[in-house]
Length: 401
Ligand code: F0G
Image (tube, rainbow, N blue to C red; front, side):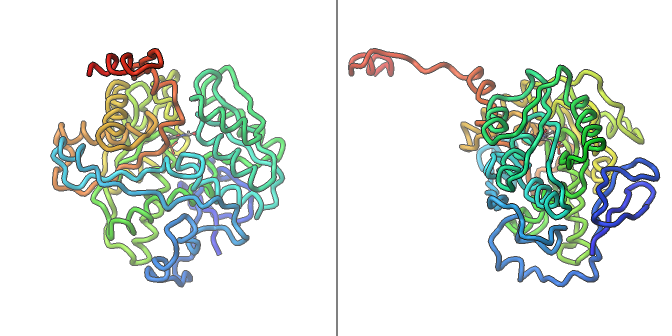
């Protein structure tokens, strides 16, 4: 049976305690399993379909899960972009191919299932967009109400559309994501809604399966895992999962965990570069990649450990670099992602150029959300369609034929 354990003081709590922080020291909690008691072989896993639930022995859900067949996302070999960077083994795990179009579905299938397991009646989150879309989808599937708080005017169109259409109660606050998270946290504590931001240790359990799948798809551990970092939950989750696989003896090494942020919103990068014990929050984060427009990442404490313990690194990329890479992925690889997702690949390019990445490495970039999430940012970068009269000469002239 699993427990919740404080990552700072080691205090342990029962798995069914509704807790988001350690009540003794206030630090983050994580789910710990008795790995000695887990009886599953790699072979048994490989017989099941590639999905979050392939790995159910390492997940905390003991009821029929709330699922929409999340996970099992493609791992693409980036041949052309890899060639341009001098990397033979550059891969992208396309998390935009999940049911709601982002990796958040891995967390929400587990998180919303846990809400039911813990007999919670309603769920809530703050979000830069994708978490709210995913929560709305899974709450709809579960048949329970969801409340989502968004930073007004800073959430991409597709994500708001999803949250609304799937029936969440959508509230826009005149403040940024960090403030929205504080508010929803207080609301959940005072009114008993189940908080499904990544401060919830159960949600991260679902997200760790990105790492499990990538190892299964590659047939081994990559040298490096590169993720865009916002609230720093995903990089922490992937690290935790791979650590568990190592403790189970399923893998022999860990990848260098590498986090990429936008220049205008990069407290984790700063903490790594300046070797700070903790992040210094940025009060006014700004970037075109609104998904990762976060100044005070709640999971920074876990993410710094993940990066440092694996000999990984962190880098920031400009909005221009993010958008150029978004176009490159779309036009040279056929992979449509939203800006935040392109940050991981843009970061690799920068780290190769600076010599921090060795060209012989096998690298998995997580591209986290689908291109259609943020159509406005796409349209702004492209020439509008050419409108012509409905006759062949006009067509030939438009095509200069
Ligand atoms: N990429 C995308 C597309 C995201 O939506 C997010 C986070 C991240 C990367 C960063 O992941 O927070 O685990 O470090 N989006 C959250 C949201 C904050 O509300 O949708 P992280």
